[in-house]
Image (cartoon, rainbow, N blue to C red; front, side, top):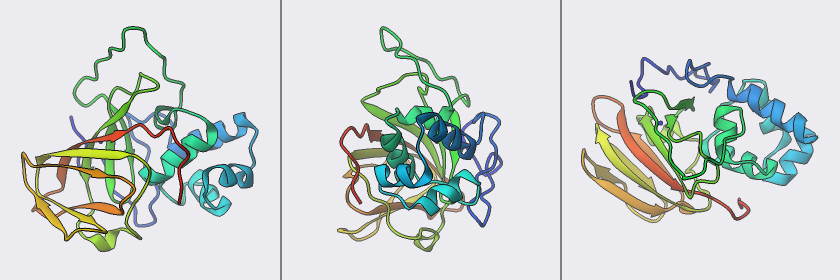
Length: 213
């Protein structure tokens, strides 16, 4: 979320997620398998998570890369921990709540706007979700719309320059060492506005309530 970089991820114009050497199965394959194991049709899962069945079909067929919001919705609809959609396997609820993620060994998932490296993916039921993220988007026009979902989030700029767009505030520029905490239900999007893709440590609260549109 070595850290993700342009060399590790080259977004396809159609939004098709490439297979990552640290992502095991493509998320399209994981979603199809988990949906079938749960016994849901595309329409049934779509109704449960508030997504069109056509959207789920495109994701399962590698024609669309799911956003963070979509992953949250699908995990909720399947009744799974979000980490299971990232890794393709049920995380263990390790006693003592300790895990170490070595440098470059997180689980990589990519969208057209961001490359996420999920940290501590082995633990289920985490109270927050830590992501090392490279921001590939260079313009707000790279987003079909502002992203919104339940919860709160925080990010800290590790490298580059980030412009945070939100629906209630003017665009805000953040440089290395700057950070921001905000309500995730407010429309938002992060854009790299420096000479290279920015990298941030992004922490999102675990969503336990049903997601709404």
